[in-house]
Length: 135
Image 1 (cartoon, one colour):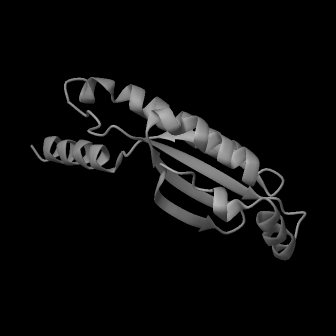
Image 2 (tube, rainbow, N blue to C red):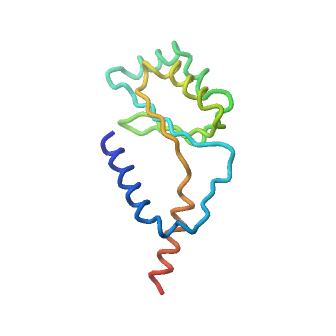
Image 3 (cartoon, rainbow, N blue to C red):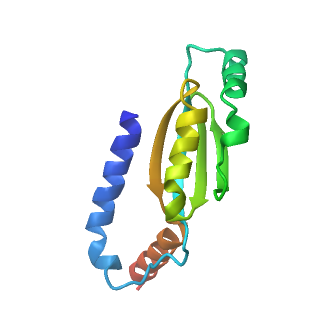
């Protein structure tokens, strides 16, 4: 968790330093949905069998993702748990939170982060920096 926080802080500092580079650019997100990253950390004091039993008891698979949520990505990170990016309408944020509280608590430690796609922006910044360096 400390590494994640440090990484986010470093990224924010870097972005702040790059503000003059991107201030004149239009990086508007063209969507009526937001991205939310859900981190489900395995409770390592439980075996996989215990986790799966608890998921069945909590009706995890019937509850998550909630109606209206679209899974953008779902990865298993060995040693950590599952990292899921969900696209939702802002009005459905409460439903997402309730689905996690009702079905994931007691199985996973959870973290939830508002998220946005940066890949295209990073590629644009990189291309401009490479072009300016070659001049």
